[in-house]
Image 1 (cartoon, rainbow, N blue to C red):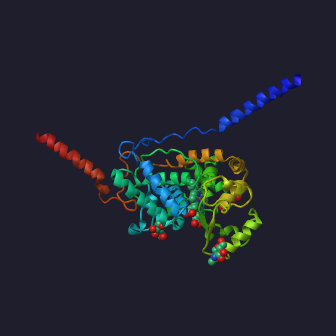
Image 2 (cartoon, rainbow, N blue to C red; image 1 turned 90 degrees about the horizontal axis):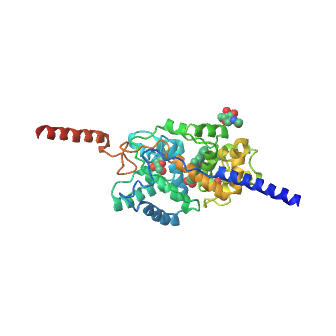
Image 3 (cartoon, rainbow, N blue to C red; image 1 turned 90 degrees about the vertical axis):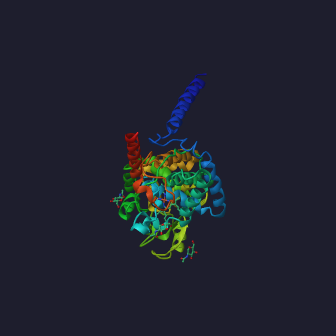
Amino acid sequence: MASTRVLSLFLIIFSSAFLSEAEAQAQAPPPVAKGLSFTFYDSQCPKLESIVREHLKKAFKKDIGLAAGLLRVHFHDCFVQGCDASVLLDGSASGPGEQDAPPNLTLRPSAFKAIDDLRAAIDKKCGQVVSCADVTALAARDSVFLSGGPEYRIPLGRRDGLSFATRDATLASLPAPTSNVTVLLNALSKLNLNDKDLVALSGGHTIGIGHCSSFSNRLYPSRDSTMDQTFAKRLYSTCPSSNADNTTVLDIRSPNTFDNKYFVDLMNRQGLFTSDQDLYSDGRTREIVKSFAVNQGLFFEQFAASMVKMGQLSVLTGRQGEIRASCSVRNKRSQSEEGIWSLVDDLLQTTLAQS
Ligand code: HEM
Ligand SMILES: *[C@@H]1O[C@H](CO)[C@@H](O)[C@H](O)[C@H]1NC(C)=O
Ligand SMILES: *[C@@H]1O[C@H](CO)[C@@H](O)[C@H](O)[C@H]1NC(C)=O
Ligand SMILES: CC(=O)N[C@H]1CO[C@H](CO)[C@@H](O)[C@@H]1O
């Protein structure tokens, strides 16, 4: 009798402790940046989201690697001077820019083309009303979902920037794959992203590939001791020398599926980059890695929240920036957009004065 009482008391305490932990884990949706909204294109381009989804569904049937390419382009765009499509600007005409910086050298040309194709499809239905920055954000969102990841909504209304970042600014904004957790946490905290954001966003490496040059620091001159030996053997055959030009998948368990296997890799010391494996080696982030490895739902929830946060970094809104006609070049007229408004004002003044 007494023991049943004790047991039920135990159960009550246990289950309420469990509940409050679950509640603590539930994500409050991140705040929406001023000027963005979930209904931004509802009147001007009501079919926007289905155009993007249907287009990418077809494109991924031909090349699933494109999903990884598009996700990475959005990350690079947002981390360097904000999500303003600056990464899409072709720097060659105006000197070295974001595109010429080493991290860009491995962005996939097919991703840039897909964004152009998407814009063309959207323009055909709606006219030139949707920014390249929003197209990039939507393409990344659907790349996740169509690869098996979570479906989530993102606020829209970003405007396209008028300039690209310099090569040096690009290098300074994107952490290197050789970074440890200290360096990564520091870099992300400058963007108001925390330890959970770091681990969840790194989970983007559940799809896609990397070049030898991005992880040869872990093979040469000697094997990084935090790397599994059998895994290392595989990598040595992929990259027989420190400057070999070859690629391998980021998530050996399910390279083309957006799932939580990346975190299982890390727990098995099969992370590819130092920046991946250190998330498990470092006590500050290890428990977060474990929690995602055993609970895909938890990872998906945190990833969606962190992507919404990342997708709103230093966005341009309202009358800032422009809506680019072609995603890879600034509008010709746009320097004088302000000029045009003042011209309109002048005309009005004159008309008023005359009447
Ligand atoms: C935390 C810091 C990060 C570092 C140091 C990093 C570094 C890298 C590197 C070095 C590559 C491979 C480049 C190559 O050798 O070809 C790569 C690929 C990739 N990254 Fe990251 N990354 C980070 C965060 C992110 C984030 C936040 C996302 C998205 C949420 C992301 C998504 C991807 C994807 C999808 C690929 C594969 C691209 C492809 O297959 O074309 N990464 N990353
Ligand atoms: C992390 O990397 C930085 C820069 O390379 C280095 O100064 C620091 O000692 C490293 N921290 C740890 C804990 O390894
Ligand atoms: C590239 O990697 C594969 C295994 O991933 C390997 O069989 C091949 O020999 C490598 N190519 C070169 C040029 O090293
Ligand atoms: C210098 C350089 O190679 N820049 C490239 C950056 O990425 C885009 C898309 O792949 C290329 O068009 C640029 O040439």
